[in-house]
Length: 77
Image (cartoon, rainbow, N blue to C red; front, side, top):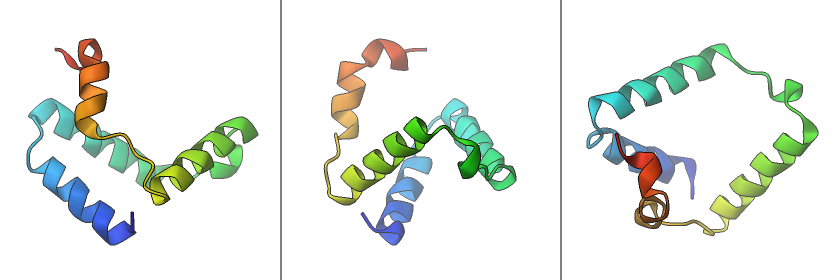
């Protein structure tokens, strides 16, 4: 998925999420601006992240609805 498509998708979700989720996303984005320590991450974590990004670029994604269904207990308030 290209960056521009990803941005559009994220913007669609942002307009639909509840206040709690919006605050979480805001905190993540705010922290990202202040934190740029890729080099400090363990090699195993970097490999895992790179693998996930490659899978996403190849379209090997799991739809949000499937994840919510699988992990419903994690998403309940």
